[in-house]
Image (cartoon, rainbow, N blue to C red; front, side, top):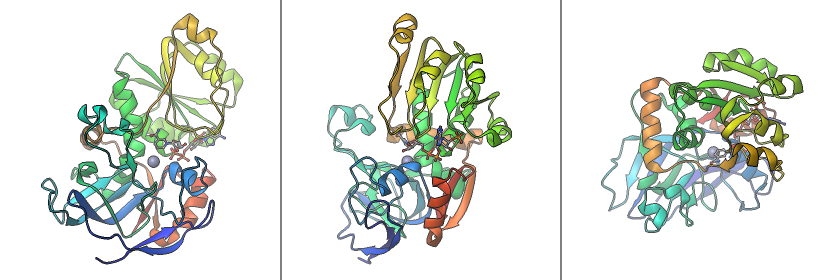
Length: 335
Ligand code: NAP
Ligand code: ZN
């Protein structure tokens, strides 16, 4: 087998340098993907700097992958060489536990993430178990589809699980890679959508993506005006905020759902939870079945990421721009 050529961080927070590795024999259930595009999810930045204490170096980031199948293992029947496919955060699961049997592989305790203790998609190729490799609908262009494989499913799945529908009022906190896709899916589900952002300059674009209202989340007066008005708030921001203000924005029985990962523990007052039976919860990516559904919905309803293209060789420049919250709205690397 040929060596795989990628870009790796060799220490926490280090810039990415060219790095080759030998992938070994292709597993019977595995496929190899020749990568054309890979989105830069903020989780890649968390992993590069070892924010979660799980990174191993050298570390090749990347888990929003689109490419073409270049090899299939002897037991793979569902995918063919030459097919255009996608791969997201999850590359494998045990396949046997209660959660895998229920089709909730994203809850498997043995979940293998594409770029945790494995080599990810800032590379020319990647391998994964074929169960986690999805065919991509023809209507979705590769660059705009890549971010759906992690960012898209991560916002789609909890909105489906929480039954978002035309009667729902949905808040999206943080209009970045995940948030700008969340606005679009919330609109597809028929909800009234409120974008919460620290960047006033994003108002026009948030409205164009489908938000009915835009709230500058650093203005306490604007935050007070939405008190008691929302059924579901999806936090996609990766920063600490006063979560009590968002709890106050919920109607009784409303839910604040975390997909973005703030650095500090989430602290909320108990009384608004008790008095209004409000819930604080979280959600991890989505199952392979949900990813397939999400791609189909995106293709039929025109949901796609707004992207900024970078060549793979410019990955470090792209990462710097993501760090500064300057990308509108997803940086995508291409080979
Ligand atoms: P991103 O593109 O960098 O967007 C994050 C957004 O958060 C920014 O655009 C910004 O929106 C907001 N933000 C940034 N700094 C802030 C601050 N100091 N205060 C308040 N808001 C701030 O990141 P992403 O790729 O969407 O990822 C977001 C988070 O989701 C990350 O923590 C990532 O690890 C996590 N994630 C989780 C899952 C999962 O399965 N749960 C999957 C993928 C990613 P505004 O400019 O609008 O304020
Ligand atoms: Zn991600």
